[in-house]
Image (tube, rainbow, N blue to C red):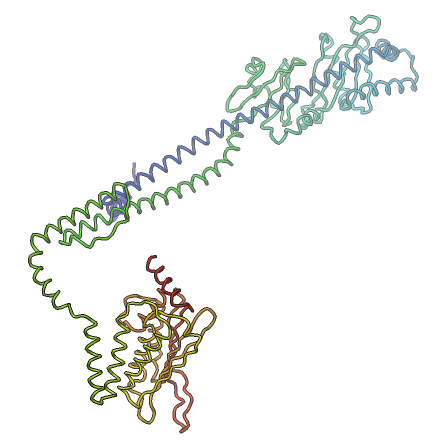
Length: 632
């Protein structure tokens, strides 16, 4: 049940969820696709996570079984080798007739004083050397005479605990048949460690009648040696190693816990000659020893396998999370991309609704269905527009176009030739100054009519000089100008009419109202080559630009907006950036400190300096460079 609180209140959670659905998903086909893809990805990640987890559990379980089999085989081999060594020791003692006879005589008749202390020591050394030469892990040998309950001990390590255990064991099992080797544990239940000994017991044979059993022998070794046998695999061991005999006695427990019998599924253990089974969440891997009636068992809970998988699960979750995020982003990008592909179609349909059937956005060519639909829609609108033009508009526009064609046939050369005729007429009448002005104007008009984009710096300077001469006629003695260009700069070229707008700005806004006949306003144009660039300087000594206005101009120049209100310096700035790159632009300094004049006037802040930076390129090189820009 959904809690009631989610439905109560002015605006519940479900209200906002519904509003979000209606706003973002309901009215957007591609957002619905995105949501479906996201859900599919999420479900796929969950399924993949559980599938990988189960696969990893299976792999880890198989690995644990392989290592378990290896460890159990190692323990079995260790016991088998111990039994083989014990038999070799027995055979070697039997073949040593003199010493063996003395040992058996001691067992049968302990009261007889046949051996001196020296002889007993020599006998002890001989027995120790015998078993030590075969197996260095053995700690000693106990011999028990059944008839007289006599105990003999041989070995360098004398232990009262092992002595007492073996004596009690032999007395309690006097009626047992020791026809084969037995593995016996001397563990004291009061101790929780594995520091006890394991005995391999066998019958003691009469040298005069080998079929006659006169006692019991027990060769013992430390239980810790079993753990040492599989030490190289210890880090791969899961759970506990047990050694159990056929009488359900727990002989060895690697964990030293030695659980009671009810903790083991004895029936299944005894039925399983080799293999594994699962019981109450614990896996039992069993090997029946090939060298004796005991079982070697590795028991490990399945939770240990799952713990190993948990470490990998964190990595899997991290990877799946990254995959989910990546898929989310790819789905989002692809959805936005296809929605963007559809947008020109919807925009075109909206434009058609308003009656505009041409000037549509150009869609990149594509061969898929969306490109086909868009191109066919454009063709349909174009055909419809053609039909309307032919049927309704064509006839009305025909007369208007004919009239416009007649009006537009004024040849620019006609205007140039007319100016030249006027100049010659004035010159013939002695109006030299007016004639000169007409000539300058005619030269400027000829320059303007040229379609060249790139001009030499000399041509640009000549055009600027003509422009300044016209202003000189206008202002007279209230204005003066100076042009100082090194010959090196004339070897290079620039884009056409790049200086005139800057000079016009200086004339109109800088010095137009400041010059007098006594103190004419001055404007200077200079240049220098600096590295791979050429710098043009346009300086005036006018009133300068106020700080706030200068900041605004600099901000607009830095923005590089192509749609400024003024077409002067901003136009020049944009042309510089388009042709030469974003680092080439106008730089303006104003309110420069002017040096005082000889009469003591001046020295106040004023004037403006505009710097233009262009690349040092020859005319042909610049033309090819500009053509490359146009093609790009």
